[in-house]
Amino acid sequence: MSKPVQRQTVAAANGIATDAAFGAVTPAIYLTSSYAFAGFEQPRAHEYTRTSNPSRSMLADTLAKLEGGAGAVITATGTAAVDLVLSQLNSDDLVIAPHDCYGGTYRLLVSRRDKGQFKVAFVDQGDDAAMAAAFRRKPALVFVESPSNPLMRVVDIGAIAARAKAAGAKVSVDNTFLSPALQQPIALGADFVIHSTTKYLNGHTDVVGGAVVAAAKADVETLAAWANIVGTTGAPFDAYMTLRGIRTLFPRIERQQMTAAAVAAFLAGQPQVSAVYYPGLETHPSHAIARKQQAGFGAMLSFELAGGVEAVKHFVEAVRIFNLAESLGGIESLVAHPATMTHAAMGAEARHAAGIGDGLLRLSVGLEAESDLIGDLEQALAAI
Ligand SMILES: *Cc1c(COP(=O)(O)O)cnc(C)c1O
Image 1 (cartoon, rainbow, N blue to C red):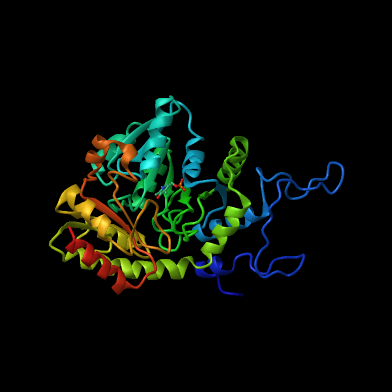
Image 2 (cartoon, rainbow, N blue to C red):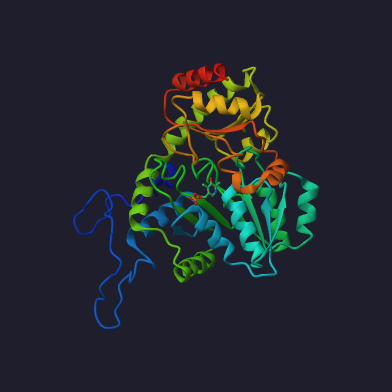
């Protein structure tokens, strides 16, 4: 008996050297919209690329193995992946969503709610009493994002999943911030795992894409059928690129989180910084849960500048290595100002309720040398 294959090996090698035509080590990319039938009423494995495509299938298979799911559906964007899960709801269904979720997810939930497509309760999912009250409203779906964006709040996925199961609700976890290298929501009880593959999975800031991995085969089939009905599936080229990115997922994220831990420790000691949000810090409110359910603390963090928005302006104009840009999870380090960028669509009131201040900055720590990144932050702090 061979040993069970490690997930790092799946990432590096799934689908490698499986080409029957030429023995190509790297899986071919299939840029075709259509597939010839073998004969009358004899379709082959694929008929039309909106429905299915070999390059997309290989990415789906790899992601399903990495997340421990029955299968996956690859979508054009991460937002389309969120929408695909939401598409299964009826108008009377209630979604419990985090009050501090990704700004685009928040906007999507509110936009579809306002069209009467489902109901939403935005809840602080770390607040037990608030969650108990929301569960009494009999939700159909609990939408989890952990760690949350941008405050890195971690919720107990296993506890939420157990409660949801007892209430007959499905659980979907957005695993974008950690990737399957650091967190396995299905093993913790989730029904669906959502990814913006734009981020760590592709990892090189040159593709937008998404995926839904489902724990149950029936859910995979339903979601795949629905993705075909609405035409939300991703492009073959993007699938090829994303699989190429996944090859190095484990070493990238391991190195990036080492540097992020050093950056968090550095920032925590600076007088201009009033708070640092990184689950790896023992002072972080959900450090214990993160330690229990994650294989690492990730490479995302945020921090508050005591000088507020004035200090933010000077800081982001002074950085040289960090780039002021949205998105995250790439090989390059980025700084974002949630209030005016990623979370602008939430509105000031919802941001305030979620604890997202005007002096908050979010960092995505890349693969540059730790000393260069800390040096850059040091000189930018001196410039505020
Ligand atoms: C970026 C992001 C999304 C949306 O993904 P897109 O690929 O930009 O559509 C969803 N959830 C989280 C946590 C994200 O960071």
